[in-house]
Length: 241
Image 1 (spheres, rainbow, N blue to C red):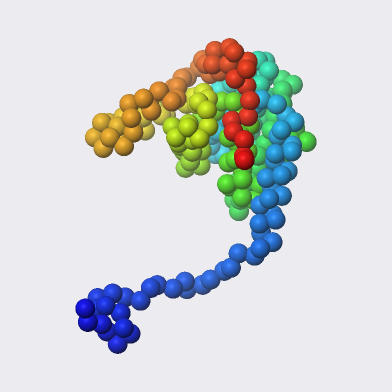
Image 2 (image 1 turned 180 degrees about the vertical axis):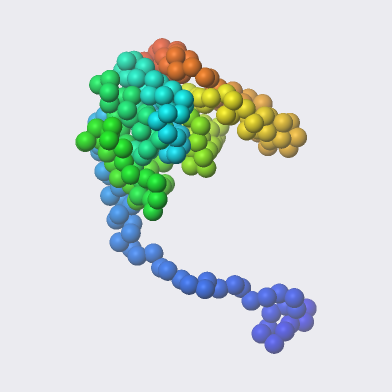
């Protein structure tokens, strides 16, 4: 095969180079480790919780905000702690329902350049500040015995599919994953069934049974209560070995 003046095969270009290269500062790894250590030590002592996902943009007069407050209240009455992303919107509603009714209210806040400041309903000793999304995700998943997914945006979908993937691939045991708001989720679920499953066969039919879709707060609590009728199932979702 003939080559060009640089000795490369004809038609093959030189490997592209970074226009700007930023080496990772080794001290960054200590920041990452410190976030893990702080999260593990603080959340280990809290006890079983339910994570509530949803949009930061949902206003207090939105019906879904009020639904999230009610879900959190009922979970508190059943003895569960509540974990949210610590910000406004649905996250605030989740923390509010726990805080106002004497429950455990945890916030896993993330430092963002916009829209995210921790809400006032997080227990003062349970407000964890995160710099790294991937550390925050570990905390969400490890200490939650169920996931309640309210209407939201890209971040909510990211969290939903992260958990579904972990259960589907058996990286964590099956836990209740409950989508609230059937009208909101209908289009996405139709696409999952008609395109992902039936047309492309990228998932199995059994994967559609990994989650529930409900509208009423009482149904959320019922599903979780029935799932944990045997209390020996209540344990952190995985151990990092």
